[in-house]
Image (cartoon, rainbow, N blue to C red):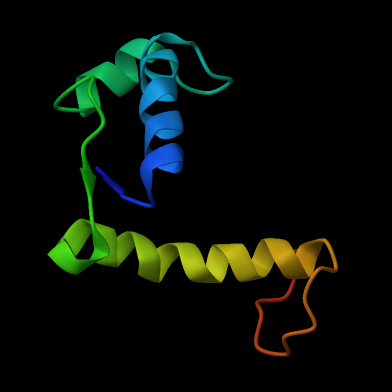
Length: 85
């Protein structure tokens, strides 16, 4: 499940899902994704639906985003996690 963003963004994400499900990635085989996911169709839900998994994803994604921005010198936020050396 992913968080809905709007018509164009949602459509582009849904169009890429079949490629994601059938392509071999550097670390994972397509069969591993297929076994872990309940459907080959991406489900979208709005933030207002208050889905627990989407809330957890937000909590986890924010520090990762801040770390990447700091790693590449794209933020001056003093609270961003330090790059790993």
